[in-house]
Structures are given as structure tokens and as C-alpha cells.
Image (cartoon, rainbow over all chains, first blue to last red; front, side):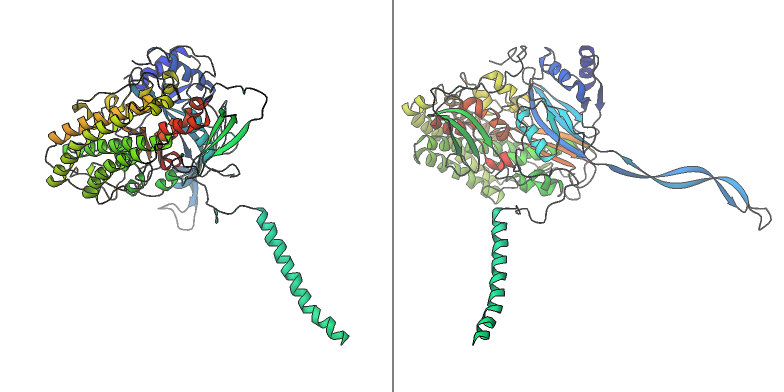
Length: 235
Length: 391
């Protein structure tokens, strides 16, 4: 099988505007992946499928990965002016001296959602080639191009990602929730998903009935209290 | 026969969508929700069908009735703790689920598996394939109206195999047998003898089953030429397992990836010609015969030795950061596990690639234009288990 670097070079020859990056995998599996920019994804993917030498005609697995914002705390050495008594000088006299101080700094690495595609070639009996695409962020820019027009097997699996991760696949023929019910609003596979207290709770017509019953009971109790008093007044 | 060249053709955009069918006459369409509690759906699955008379004009599968977010649960527990949970995916073939998961983790960490454990995996995996195909055909025939008899024949054989599982692992179905780097317990010589006895009887069962069904007139009339799936669409839609091979595509992961020790066995890959229901049924019958061949070879050659890598660390197990995708040829198709490790004790991402779900992608394409009674057969020939579809 060709290495990821060779495939990358082949794509760059055919689709010059493609921005590609090899993502190394340090584990024992050695399945390195190829990150493609969403803008040229369809061109790159159709080249991979239709090229006679690569012929990745079989899309096996499509899945999403959530990478939330990462807060990184690191210790940095900074040069800074410090006022203090210098050794050897007379006590009481202070001087401004430049000194290296260790300081903890916090920075936030922005998170993103990722779609991962595992491609195989039935014709060449090769694979897998791992493709990855990243969204801009996790909140409002979560669109990625759908590869369903090229490989039908992505149809349900992309619907599942849309359902569980919230990536919106543009160009998907039928993008609806797959596993959760249509009225559900959240995306359960995200890392920061908080489970509701009551999974079963759904506002139903029954709630209104219960409210009316409650009001009716209160009115009856009120009536029962004031009722005998009225008759008592007549006696 | 392969699909070489067929897929590489510049196919027009949208060729892989279902071909819409126009209703005849001026009557209204009847919308029927088949399921989630329908005897033919093998569990809780719904098909929203639009009918013109008896012809299917539209079919939309509806999933999620058995969804429990297996993937999310697995991200919250350790690698080992997911192993018994994989049994519950495709609960008809728990051994192959164990195997696929163990294979993915072994790819992630680079662990090796001792010879004897590999042989035990092959023996158990092929027994699983045999009982899955037998009961799948049994259910399929039952849905066609042959109530009981063929299914009971299949279940009689399945019981013998489940007894073997129970003897070895302690459980008939929820076996929790494989570990990363081997198997949980070793097989005794008595168990191997018992298995040899059972395997010696399987061939007679397949003969009997085939004689009962293969030339049955009702079966032939109702299945030949019904629910045809072309090779191009099968590959494009990611169909795997007996369904793909019934469409004539020579792709068996046991032969392609040669995972485990499958390159040591002599077996053939049966291929269909038409891609209809009858071919799928025949492919399963023929694969049962090939499974017997593999079982006989494995039971003859099984060596002694440990069943666990002595250096394998099971508890406090933290793989290095990285990812791995491991797949095997499960009885229903390609079962894959995709794992991402961030160096912690739990997987960062745990994904199951379910063959049953992906094989349902083309259900609409196969059903359009056929009668409502054929939908039950076409659906039955896909062979799904809802525990795996919904996860």
C-alpha cells in the first residue's frame, strides 16, 4: 500500500489548490491520517475515488470526534524588573534589578469538531486511508461538506454524527436525526454534554390536564370550606 | 468476478440515490408504519412505507428505539470494562464482537496474541458464524411463512454450539471471553473433543437444511429476482458480509486483511451472481460449509501453550496516545472499532462501525417497486440485529 505521504503527493499533483496535512499517529497501529480543508474536500475525495491507481471505492467508517476548548496552564520564564535590596549593598537601600521569574500563564486552545473517514479500496484490496476534516469551532460554524454524493455509505453515518455531535453536513440529501428523537435539542456525544435530570420528561398535554385537576381540587376544597358556613347562616 | 472498473466510471451525481417510482392510477397513497412492534422487524425497528395498492413507492427506515449510547458509556469506563458490553451489541454473535474490540485495542498497543489463543479465536469465531447464518436463514424462512420447522432445525444446531460456549466461557450468549493479548480461559482437552464431535455433525445438518430449502418452489418463486442489489451500489454503499458477496464482489476481510491467522486456512469465498434474496440465502448456506472446513483444520492444528500473553497488562491499562481502527469479518459484515487514546485509562473516543446499520442504507433501493410482502423478505435477507444497529 502507498504511504500517506505518497497519496498526499498524488493528490497535490491532481488538485493543486488542495491544502493537506499529514497527521501522524504515534501509536503502534501506524495509521497516519490526512487532514483536508473542507473547502476542497469534495474535489480531493472524488479524486481518491475515481483515480485509477488509488481507487478508494469503499468508504467503511465515518465518525465524529469532539475536541473541546483546551485550557493550557504552563510555567513560563519571564524577564522583569524587580525592586529589592541587592546583596552586598547597604541595608535599607533598594534598587531596580532585572530578574528571571517563573510565572504561570493560562491560554485557551480553541476547540473544534472533527469528522473522520476510513477509506478502503475493494478493487486494490488496500486501506485504510484515514481522512479528517475539522470545523472552525464548536458553536456556530460547524458546517462540513457531506461526502454522501460520492459514497452512499456516509448517508446514515453522517446523519448519526449530525445527531450525536452536531456537525452540519452541507449537501447531504436527508439530514435528520438518526438515533435520538426529532424533538431532542442537544448533542449527547459532545464531551461537555450534561445529562438531564429526567430523560423521560417531555411536556405533554397531560401536564395541562394535571394543572386543571389541581385547580379544580383547590376550588372544591375552597367550596367545601365556605359551603357549610353559608347553610349555617340560614339556620 | 469483481467490480473492477465499474466503480471507477465517471458516474453522474446522484446515481447512488434510490430511483423514484411513480404511482399508477389516481388513487391516494397509503402510508403504513411497519414497526416498531412488528413480528418481522427482528426487534424494535420501524419502516415508514408509502404504498400504491401493494407496491412500495417510498420507504424510510426509522432507528433509535434501542439506542443507549454505547459509545458514550464506553468513553466513561476503562478499556477492559467495555469488553462485556460489546457482547450486547450483536447479541447473536458476541464472540466476534469481542474479537473485533480486542483486535482494535491490540492494534492500538501493539500487543501480540499467543498461537493457541489465535486458534481458539478462529474456532469460536467460525462456530459463531455458523450459528448466526443458520438462525438467520431460519428466521428468514419463518418470515416467508414456513412457520417453525426450519427455524427449529436451525435452533437445534445453535443450541449445541451455545452449549459449547457455555462449557468454555460460563455463559451461553454473553460470553465476555476475549482479552487484549489473548483469551480469558484455556480450553480443556475434553472441550476440544466435544467441539470435534459437534463439528463432525454440522455437515449433515447443512445437507439436511439445504435439501429442505434449496429447491423449495415457494422459496424460489418468492426470492429469485427480488430485492436485487447491483455490485456498484453495494460497494458504494459500504455493504459488507454475505450481502456484498451475493452481489458478486469478491471481498472477504478474512482474505483481504488476513487478520489473526486466517492466512493458514484453506477456504473459499462463495460469490453470488444476481444479488437477489436467493443469492444471499445461498451464500449463507455455502459460507456455513466453508466454516466447517476452517473449523476442521483449526481443530486439527491447534497447538499447546498459553492463551494469554504473559506480559500483557490487563488492569491499570493505559495505551500511549494515538488511534487505531481494527476490523474483522463478522457474520453480518465488517465490524470495526475505532479507538482514540489520550493516554488515560479510558478511551477518549470509542466508535463501533456496525455492519447491520450500514447494510440497511440500501433497504429503500432494494424495496422500491416490490410488494409489501416482499419488504419483509428483503429486510430479512439483510440479516440485522437491532442491538448493533442502534447501539
